[in-house]
Length: 76
Image 1 (cartoon, rainbow, N blue to C red):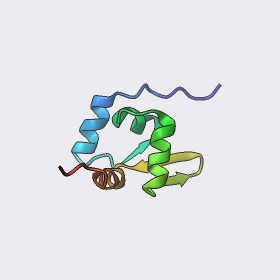
Image 2: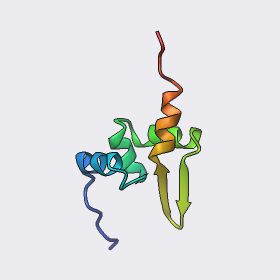
Image 3: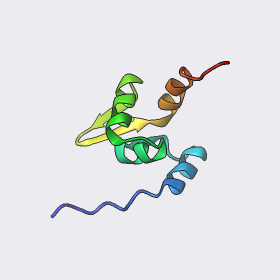
């Protein structure tokens, strides 16, 4: 059997990112953090060029995602 991963705690991840102690998230963490589906978050990360592949792990840079999302802000 594969190893079991701890369930993602959104509040805990948000605090780590806000404090600057966590810059990268996995796809499932990012989907929860940004309140979207995993495939939508994956596509967002691809479009923002924020994905990193290390062996079999995919990490997403939250700073790049935040900067990318700011481009879509409505200025009315």
